[in-house]
Length: 160
Ligand code: SME
Image (cartoon, helix red, strand yellow):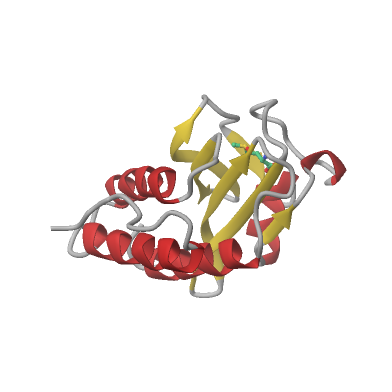
C-alpha cells in the first residue's frame, strides 16, 4: 500500500520521486485515462504543496480542453499556441514562468496565480495533454519542479 503523502516535504527531489512512484502504482493496469488523470491531479496536490491549481488539459480536436484538476473552476478551452498551456502543447517544451504577468498572452483563470509550470505529456511526438501547476507565490517553481513533472509526464504518456 502506498502512502499518498510525502515522507519529507522539505526534500524536493524525494517528493517528486515519491510522487512518480505513487502515480506509477495508482495508474498501472488502469486503462481509463480520465480516472488516471483524476488520481494524479490529487497526487500532485498532495506532493506539491503551495499550489492554487494543479491538473490537466487534454489535446482534443486541435485545442486544449480542461481535464481533471484540483483548484477553482477554470477556463475550459485553450487554443494551441495561446497562453502558457498552449505554448507548452504547441512547442512540446515545458514552460517555467516565474511571473505570469510578464508572460505574453497568459490566460488568467485564477487571479491568485503568480507563477506557473506547464509540462507537456508527449506520445508519438505530439502533446496529448499538459500538466499545469499554478502557485500564488511569484517564482515558486524551479528546475527540480520541471524535472520532477517531466518524469511524471513520461510515466503518464501511455496511461491517459
Ligand atoms: N494560465 C494558463 C491557463 C490555465 S489556468 O492557469 C488553470 C495559461 O495561460 O495557459
